[in-house]
Amino acid sequence: QVQLVESGGGLVQPGGSLRLSCAASGTIFRINATAWYRQAPGKQRELVATITSGGSTNYADSVKGRFTGSRDSAKNTVYLQMNSLKPEHTAVYYCNAHLRTSWDRPYYVYWGQGTQVTVSS
Image (cartoon, rainbow, N blue to C red; front, side):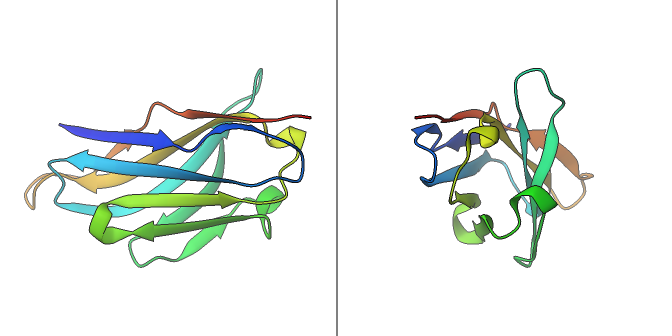
């Protein structure tokens, strides 16, 4: 079994920062890429950032220059550093991972349960 667990969410004032973590555990052979999504109340889930196996990152235009993704391959963990947060960043943040559990198994996408980020004064 594979589990993705996000952490680091919470309540923060506008202009503040948070660092989200997403740790993958279980039988993992190789993680190809990971991604961060978010879903605000009443809105569809949207892609925030992607992090490749080599550490390359891509971001949604709305978070460029504000959010930074990174990964620690040794820990099977990815991070999302969020700075200068605004109320419109309030959402449940999810991570997913495109991975395989064995050399002879196909890649699947696994999701975490999400972590709430609330930006409010």
